[in-house]
Image (cartoon, rainbow, N blue to C red; front, side, top):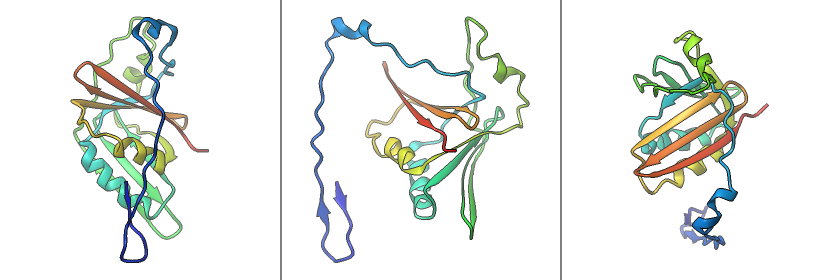
Length: 168
């Protein structure tokens, strides 16, 4: 990773992260985390576009509010003492969820114009967006208002899930 500095020279940082591959025979020992009933599920815009917007917002605030509704609208918003900046994404679409136990019926009863929102750490969101070298075929965002944001990135037969808790 190349880091800029105040001088004309740049710095390179290398992180060695140990990775232990879990053998297939042990996969059944691990379970996916349970996902709470979400208020809104929405397709994300292109991750490159979203990353560009969030990188600019990072210079002004430590947190970002993600808002979305069942009409396919999503907003990224930062608020400081001096300024409030909102980026609007329209017509993103909402994934159709089929539930065996009707646990997601709350989204069907919700007013399509009502926004679900969560304030999250902007650096954690950037970690997700910066780490995506493979362009997913679909990217989803599930919001549990004021509690958690759940991202699902789908690429061929791989699903990456990322949970970011809401800030108080």
